[in-house]
Image 1 (cartoon, rainbow, N blue to C red):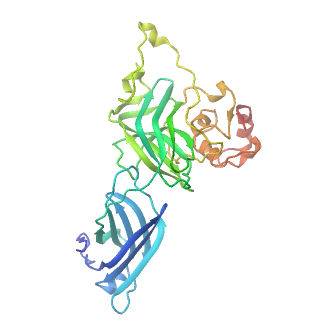
Image 2 (tube, helix red, strand yellow):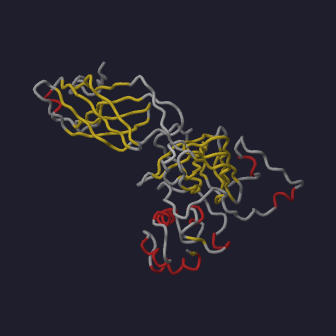
Image 3 (cartoon, rainbow, N blue to C red):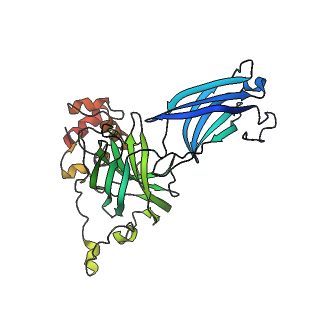
Length: 364
């Protein structure tokens, strides 16, 4: 049955329909979409911009645009294209829908849709076992029992990062908007391999007022951006603003074992622990984390603990250096490896004067 859209009375919802021949084929992070389109109103099809879309529930997986359609003498136009695919995160099975959409300049409308009877499960790097986070006055901790690449043995993953996000609602996959609390680069993982007991200590976080849903995401670099491959929502919400912690255990994730409470009021006066290096496996060359606003507040400048390596430090460690913001840190990570500190002048946001001030805080 055609998809009916009566929101525009000037364009009949039956302007065009998907014919009996249609389909999709995935190849890694690309998908080929094809369809035979029957033009019910050939004149109308020539002044709309048409596209084929592939949806997994409410998640847009792919969008291939074709412009105007000019059907043949039988009223049929055959269209197809190979485009990038944003595969749904997580390990669930998905019912996929192919949508024929048209745009007359006032907005895109669906004219027809076909839902495929066979569900799809995408083979993506994933998180296994339990996960946890801890927000303390001086640092943030994240951990996962296991990160695994279930792909074929010869299929190396892109660079992987663990990211803790604060979102206004529980994450359901697909696009999202929120505050990046912290991220830890964990490296590329060969197919049929896994890392166990991955953990990291990150800078302390700040959150504005509101009720925040925390989610731990595993994201993979695909050549031009990071895509979410798996995620775990934490059931316990966090109320902002932060920092406003009387006791760090107040916002600990429910799966985490509570820390032993020191006796007496003196416990409130214990200074925060110094940052320790993350235990997650690292690669000497990393890609940048997703270009999003970082919500992490640095508990102490990184140079107080020695010079920070531009070739091995995480984005979180680099942003702890005075004079380096999140965008600059991502630029440094994206261009690794560095041969000299003077080469950092090529990073957007670093000028001659700022580089002179940073040199004594950094190392190769």
